[in-house]
Amino acid sequence: MSRILHFLRNLLPGFKPAEVSPQTQTFINHAHEEMLNQHQEHAANWKYGKEKGWSADLEAGIIVFQFAGDKTGTSHFQTVGIYDEASQSFTWAWAQRSLPSSLRNHATMAKHWGQAQGHRAYSTSNIVCSMDDAWKFAAVTQKLAGAHSVYRGRVGNRYIFMTTEEIHINDATSPMNTASSDKSPAWSKGRHRPRW
Image (tube, rainbow, N blue to C red):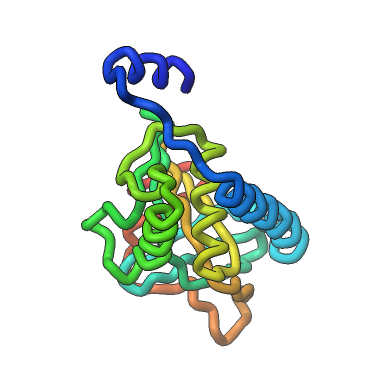
């Protein structure tokens, strides 16, 4: 990251990274800490991070988690953005016109917050950053939107950051098993065959 900043400073003599106010940085740190605490709770309550796979229906705005023993978890979701591991860059969902507008609302809230705070990373469509920065973008988005949780789904060398509502856990014997669908989702991730 420092090499990139050095390169930009040499290329653009007037370039300086945006300075963030102490209040804004405190808000970001609190949001990140709250998200990490929630992840620990979710890991204990519904096995967050132990899913065998996941799929997301972009039209319905529903994510389905598959767990061992035919259990599933379902929730409505919004897309925060996509982190590309190869380019080490994050693209905000609000800038991705290929996504339904209904899935970009929370990201748009983060954009408006960033504009109000003078934090350019939230109002720049694509940013070179670390994975930790991407987690912080998602944490701030979650806090601003009042979302229940944040999930990061991997598809190849990309990570899709999403906010979710409360996760509803079912098993195969449940009469409301929402994991079955005739329509193939646009995103899915399994242990062996991720696809976009």
